[in-house]
Length: 101
Image 1 (tube, one colour):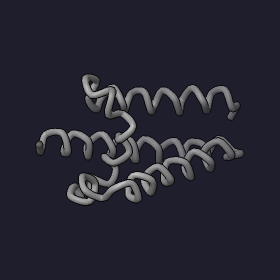
Image 2 (tube, rainbow, N blue to C red):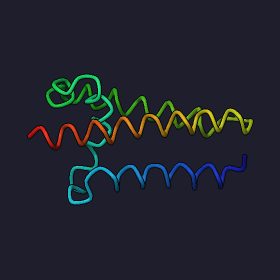
Image 3 (tube, helix red, strand yellow):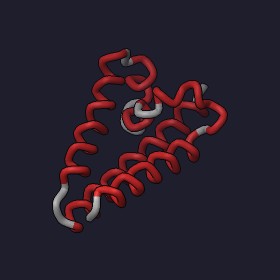
Image 4 (spheres, rainbow, N blue to C red):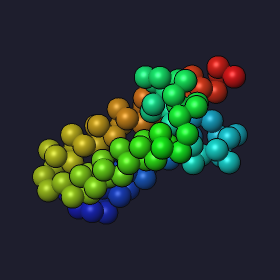
């Protein structure tokens, strides 16, 4: 798959996820990855600190590395599916964190 299409799909997936989370909370968008952790442990996502936030960012960075380095269409499709699952969990976790306050 061409890099151009990978980038378009990747950016579109992230944009949709961010828009589905809470458009009125753009100043907190940098905290968006904590929603992924909140699906499993809301307390840790809320009180985990910089180490936890960095860890969740690393998950997305590692995923992006493998996604953009994928050679076959099948690898790209699988990794894009994984991104959609990660972002879906992230949106659900963010909604849980927002509505628990």
